[in-house]
Length: 540
Image (cartoon, rainbow, N blue to C red; front, side, top):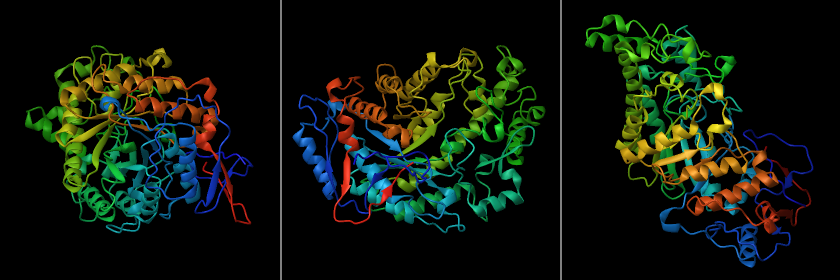
């Protein structure tokens, strides 16, 4: 029976005869279709740590068909990771569909990927009470990843899952945190109209003991300390990167473009998020310090609404308020608070993980709409003071670099010509700017795709972006995301080809047309031996 891996951002049972069948511990043998020996595909298959018969058979087939392990060509190899589904760990703290995950990891390993990425959700791990951590589901995943000879990137996800692009499940902040928010709604970001956003704790109270005697920074630090202690034997060996969440979607930004309840739609400019009492107090103090009390009464009154365009406001047009002294004061304060927030969290993370062997990374959002305008309105509301005359990404790169943190950036797959003209987008221009900023700052750069893409055009764009022809090249790339579409024949073939090309420093080579059956080498054919009942497992 042909194996078809079924996956998506959510684990749901499939009732379809294309699902693959296997047992809990995969005591299986693998058969492959006949493949022409003229194939020149090279893929990474370092299976020496894996001791199960199915993978030994994979190795035998690789040797039989002359598959070589890709080499690091002059240090240009770019390792590829794949994001796991958002609900990889269940609400009860267990690993979701472990047999399906086992098969998926086996397939990814055979395709040559370096490893996978998973979110360690604050709302799952510490949901039963302050300092009460449950890492059991993650421990099962770490062991499984190690068994397959893969590496793991772990995101310290201090944000809510749900309400943004690609969110397929709902994981709120810990219940005891939500209880504190219900008592004090100013703990979360607030817009001009008073709308509260429960995605992430407002940075305005970073250093205040508002979480049952702890500050948010202390709560994040305790979470990270617990993680390091629980997984100390895997740090630097299996767990090779810790991505530190610093805002909504794990990104260092304000929640200026929330999609929940239709609040924001692309390509709206978004809104400033500075109206909780802690942010207002900080703004007032900053204005008073320079003798401009009137500037501290709140954010710009002419900044418009979420779904407006720059020219429909008084603040963002070509010669709008953003260009005058007040505009500069506000934007310096607003972006400066975000930089300070990142500096505090990453300083704490550095102290916790230093010497562990794992890299630290921080994620910055790829806000590419309205980039081809003078004010870059959507970037400004998100906290990036980036305009035609002011570089907003160099300070970010410098702050990350100060702590030895990798600058992780999105939208690496996007092409200007694919974007609507009216949105004034330039993802390519934005990526070039970030590449130059990280090179200037001496900060390592890694990338992700912003949206789910499976086509060769998107992969080719990532390949081009990964090179250091203009600014920094990529040190790693994380693909979003493992789902059922990824394992469809043509999409899987494209992924295998992409991983091979990234292993060769971004050289864009097509697989031989004679190798059309090669997809089946990686997806494989699995049948059970010595079991009476076939267990159906589907990752969807």
